[in-house]
Length: 359
Image (cartoon, rainbow, N blue to C red; front, side, top):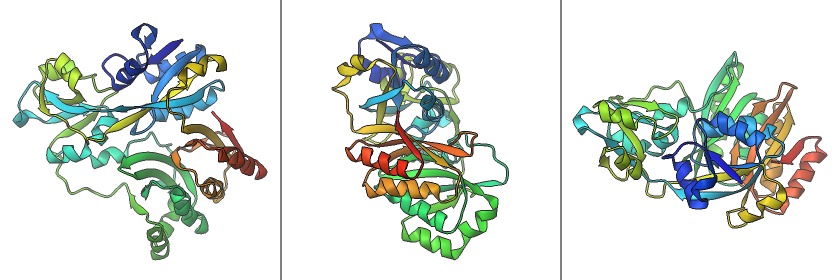
């Protein structure tokens, strides 16, 4: 068995060390490398599933559903402990570099340093470059049916949804990036729709609003939290967010420890292309989530109807993203709670001539 992920010093490597021994680890230089490795080898891939706002989930959800042999066996939770580190003094700080996940997890702490982290959410995803569309960001509670309640408002008002992407944002709150037709902006901004959204506990805003916070410290997104540790040793303007051990190994001074919420945790999904008889050794990991692919026609109200079936089964939706598949249909990778009702949900979806298959 081979386990592939990014280089030493990353949190994914740390989670791997908790699970396996070093001699079966196959370091990769990029997420694309790991995708290709998973495609061509009977192997296992550790994928950060929650608290990831850019990079890994975006690339994986865009590609992993194409690998028919890939299955999500379960996940492994790991407490993530960030520190703010450099070689220099706080008065010299002008730039902080880290993986976008770390920057967002430390957003409240960054505000204290006059670093505006709100912009990170505005460009967190590589959204499709569609003409005549406008981006809207939603915030809703993390409870079963909350997304359906929200999208039902769009469906009733015939607001066309071009793109959808979910992300954890804060404790028990999810953020959704939407692209809608520019022609529907007047509907979104109308009092009637606003009142309906308020009634289902939505918080909606467009990403072109200006933030009043003066951004005195520049935030730079990197591929991993260890990419710029060497540079931080030589440049007094650069600070990094990384693990305590990575800072000490890089001979950096630690300004604040911890520099993140105390309950900061990432769930690493275990994605596998192993044969079924080889997956028995993973019985000890957590198995309460299942990855599915929902395929729907390109109709304004269709996603709302499909999510109602999931809501009626009282299933919690942990992740959703829309992918146009160039055939007037859309694919939606989903991560759902694992229950016996999933088969019933699959049957209900099939009755509507749609498709829901396990990944």
